[in-house]
Length: 284
Image (cartoon, rainbow, N blue to C red; front, top):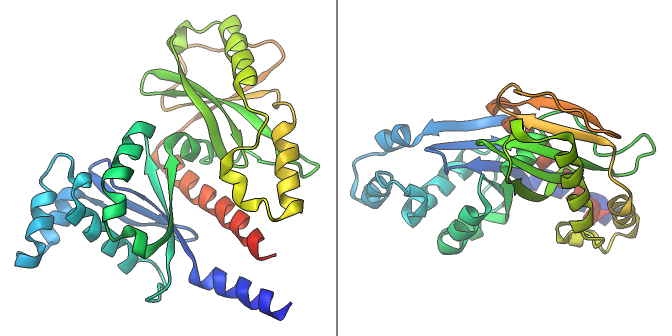
């Protein structure tokens, strides 16, 4: 009993959660409980690096269009991230969430660069975190119902002139796929058909993201139960711009959210908090 309590306390103090995005011409890092602690352009970072021989490859790498494919740049970023984490103690490790927009892009980068950089030695785990999950968590949308059961929510995103559909569960967005029609061309019947296809294509098997909880029967049972329950009858619609069209879908309520970069940052923190809660269950 005492050993478990000590283990929990040690985990809370030793383990840090940060989310980083260095794919958009900036290095932006968010620490759980602290908010944004680095937000600088690539040019700013390069100009502050001393003109010394040991930094030559880093400075040259930062001039590249795809600077994030340069291992010297990624190692330099890794050192920056760790150096500025609050109350970081040498030897402790950090969970890092890698924020991205396109899945094929992060997969390619992950395979090319990550395993050859210092990152695996500095971080406990690197967790890809998609933009849709960050947007969804930027708003106060419950993950449980009044009975304390996990719920599944239908989500639509108007993103980069394309409509995407999926569903959210315990903070994460799943089964995201693009729709051929533009947002203003979608009819109520189109949306009903899209939802029908979503229901048909959603696996009854719990997503592998929750596999780590299989040894904790109570929490895993709650996840399985929530996953198998019907979708909620509310459609959550997200867009950076005001809607050009109002939607009315029989049998569903529609809630619209207009998001910006601040909401994405809020979403980063929220999903890290959810992940920390899940991981603490391991020590119960």
